[in-house]
Length: 448
Image (cartoon, rainbow, N blue to C red; front, top):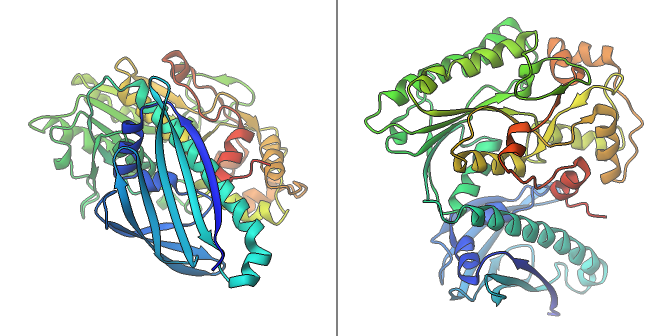
């Protein structure tokens, strides 16, 4: 069996013991899985210790394969290895080494010794492809590891927190959970009961609550019944949540509650800051009532922030996941005239901004969670197509969008919201992906 080697290293802004510890905490593996691959963690036994195993479900064309790896040669804080016991590669031996560098940093060295699937023919025709995919994966892993460690290092002197999260299984909630646990924080999930009421019991004694639960506004065409479901899932659920939190014996002192830039409505090219007036229409009305529902918590003395999310970008869910199949076959393009502004933000910046909100005592009130460079719909389509090496020559007429999605098309696809992250920037937040092309290349592993 002929073995090949892949080697890559990255400088990290923390000591070798801290970098090693980050890799041992819950959520580290999930943070390192590239979002463009639908790799799923099925089960695990133990942490990073000799004999501990992880089982993954890995897509291979239309099929899914089981990949079981075992940790061995664990030598804190210097090294550990992952060896494949079952999976697509006949041999896979991944060594992680943490080498001190300078006074406060270290170098992470990843070395993979592997044998290509398919024997001699697989090696002949697939070796180059495997090397390219490994380079994509490890660049993503190293960029994410360095950025996460730098984020946590900025607040290393602050005590670790207990954070309760509603909507913890959703796109944002699951990513936030992994970011917080790898930083040493304790995360507890708040779940709904049979009456659609959030059980706040686990939040007793928590330092903060991050409230993300709510009906997906783009899950289906808006009927009056669906609009009421959207309203109830945000306004009434938030009001009840705040009521119940205040009844706890040891309530949290901070509440970060989701909202949206839909608060501003259709505003053309007007720069929208947190002090800008509300807009008109169904979604602005919902956002206003949603934020107002948390007033009782604010009046009771909690630090309350309304996180006005823009379009959250991730291949794992949301708008980008829906766009990708169309753009990958070269059938993407602008929607309507294409001059409407899109206020977007990558999922990594969303969870990093929430972490910033938890750690920044003076941050309260409305907070636009958007990248600093909103972009027109036409430029968004052109940028996505360029990153994927595809044309963007198939515009969707406004009438077609309205025919397909009704009122929702007008509110989500054709309206213009040029929101700016004033509060985040004023409180010192550092964006990982300030421009769209940088963000998309990271999310899709398309650096060339």
